Length: 176
Image 1 (spheres, one colour):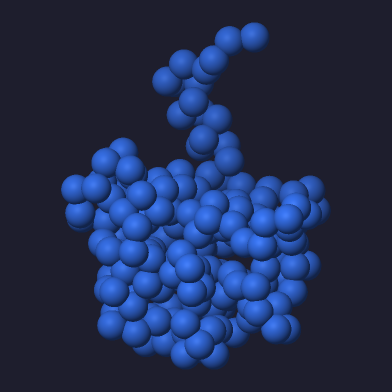
Image 2 (cartoon, one colour):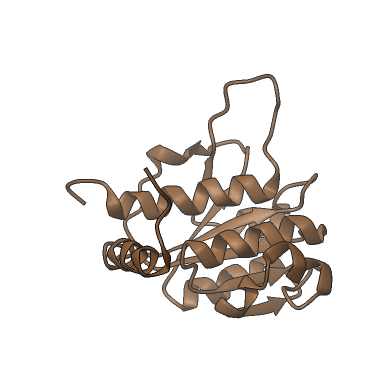
């Protein structure tokens, strides 16, 4: 067993890229930690997020501390900023995305049971307060990541990574 070289990695990534049919975008509302946003940006770049919508005073990928956490991957993303998350959700919807909040909220369904086959803009919120009520109300659907332990919630960067990966995984699953 050995690690793949650069050419082998490109071939492997190209194969998975061809199997990814759906567009995925991400709306980040109010994330204030440069380390969290950097992690989100790096994951978004790795899993081919088409666009990053930033709202609610969320930091931008241009900041030094965000860039260090993202390890320069912000150059692979396009992004826009809005003052309010509901406004960003509307912009995503205008671009053809179904807007899905990732939140522990009443009426939310387990992420793996989410019934959506279209392009998706996944919404994540502030590290402590989650998705603001107005942004949550602007979502077409809300899902959550089931958890088994005693901890009540996940770090926002981890939750975003799980959400984006689950959307991509659906394209890769047999029979899809």
